[in-house]
Length: 195
View 1 (cartoon, one colour):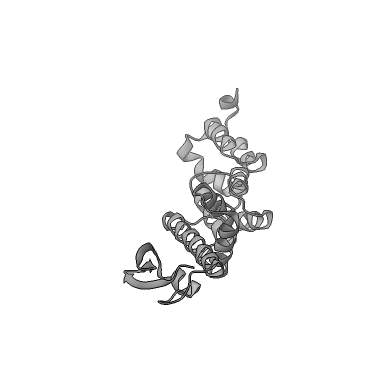
View 2 (cartoon, rainbow, N blue to C red):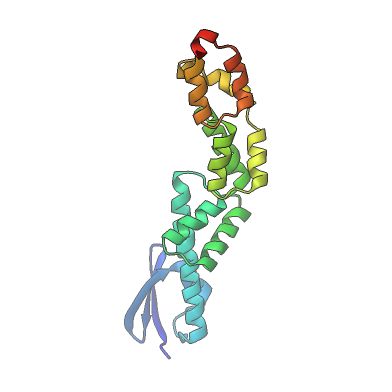
């Protein structure tokens, strides 16, 4: 068995020496959790704990970098972790940890994303589709849509920016507004404009 002969701190990392030779530089937390100390043997159980802690810390580091730019759903974060080579158990544990501390919250994400899309002129169908494609639960989608102003009000608000009349109604329909929301706009259009 290899014996730890020296540990040297280097920032938040530790240079580990085994049997008098340089071995690896590891995250401090992984070294502490694995119980490495000068004079201890790096046996299989300790090496497994060390490997597991390194994977966990790597997953947490990747997740915090992904979340640095914007909020994400739990499902979206899992997908991003997988794209960066994080194994499923470590990704699942990381997302659960971040949910527990409140850094990942699907209801908060859904409400914020729905609000942003509505402000950009999207209707309920488009908002629903976007949230579902990001892995948000049906319940969270319904709650997020309930926080928005009624779709008909939003249609009236966005119509002038889209040129008004039939042109606006078509544009809003393409952006996911339902028939009920567009009824008021269509009723206000001159019959000559429809022809």
